[in-house]
Length: 305
Image 1: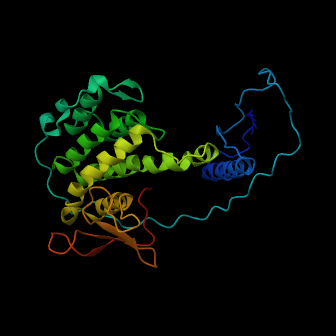
Image 2 (image 1 turned 180 degrees about the vertical axis):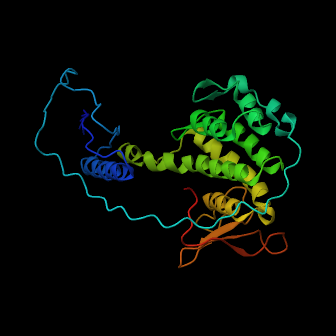
Image 3 (image 1 turned 135 degrees about the vertical axis):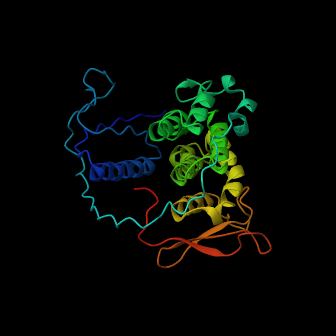
C-alpha cells in the first residue's frame, strides 16, 4: 500500500529571480523530506495565488492550515558580474542563401514524427524559412526550438533530425555569427536534457530500485548532437570569441568520461577550467588540425545574458 501526500504551497514568492530561487530552495527541501520517508516528490511549482482550492477536491484526508509551514528561505542574491567583452567579429562574409536540399530535410519522414505541438510536418518549412530569411530570426528561432522541438525540456521524435538540420545550417556559411551562436547554444541546451532527465528521475528510480534513465527521445537527441559536434568544432579557427564560448560549452557537454573513454563523436576535443575560473578548449590529438589549449572566456564572462 502506498500513500500520495499533496502539500499545497500557495506561492508567497516574488515574481523575480529571487522568487524563483526561493522556489528552488523549497523544492529541494521537499525532495529531502520525501527521500527520508522512502518516497519521491512530484512537484508542480506555480507563482502567485492561483492554485485551485482543495476544499472541493474531496480527498480522503484533508488538513488545512496545519500551522507547520516552514519559513520561506532567505536566498541571498549576489550581484551578477559584468558581462565579458565577447565579440561577434571578425566574421566571415555570408555567402548566398542556402538551398533547402543542402540541409537534407527531404530525407526525413517528417509526417511520421511529432513535435511539442503535434505532427512535425511543418518543421522543415520552419527551418527553411529561417535559412532563407523569410522569418524573423529571433521570434522564429525561439518558436522552433523552445516551443516545438524542446518544449520545457521535453524532447520529441522530430527533435533530433531538426537539430541536425540546424547544425548543417550553422556550418553552411549562410548565417552571420550571431545566428550561428544561437544554434550552438540551442544544441548544447538540447543535448543537456539527457542529463536533466537522469537527474530529475533519480528519486523515482531509487524508490523502485532501478537506475535513472533518460527518455528515449532525449537519448536520441544527445546522440544526434554528439554526431554533429566535431564538424562544428572544426570551425574554431574561423569563429569569433562569442561563438567560441558557445562551442566550448557544447564540447564540455561531451567531455571525456571516467576511465579515459572519450564521449561519443568528439574525437579528442577537451574542455578544462583553471583555478581562476577561465575555460579552455583543446583540439584533437597531435598531428590533427587544431591541437593545443585555447582560452575561451575569462572568469567574469557569461554564456547567456
